[in-house]
Length: 161
Image 1 (cartoon, rainbow, N blue to C red):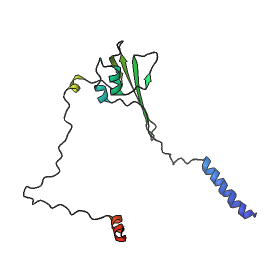
Image 2: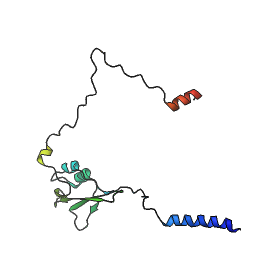
Image 3: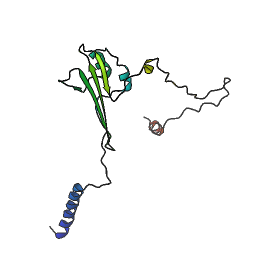
Image 4: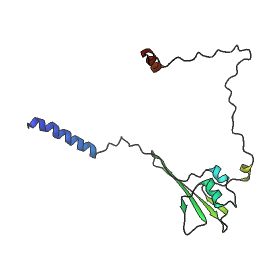
């Protein structure tokens, strides 16, 4: 082999190896958001009432992440969320305690239990949106004509498909 053909090959191999070993600082890899555990919402906690059975609590909140062998009267619902872009982690912890008859006794954690005002009739969450009213005599602006076929549909029609 001649000296001139070995030089470009060795230079190319050296550049490829150097590119793999030295990542550029301005290139960031995509990192996904990570969610783990049970999502316990305020609405679910509002449905809990003292005296409910374990099955009723499991139906409302789901199966707990932690059931401790040494504390069989307590269920722990743990949730963590890690933002992929910033790396910030948010953690929530919610515990449910049962009495000796396996009935709900108390709850503790990051989600607040419902207060008496929230247990009343639900507030209307609908909104009235005015889309514009047309005059009764029909003299309003006419509707626009229907759109014709798109570019690809027209192309396929002209080709006979």
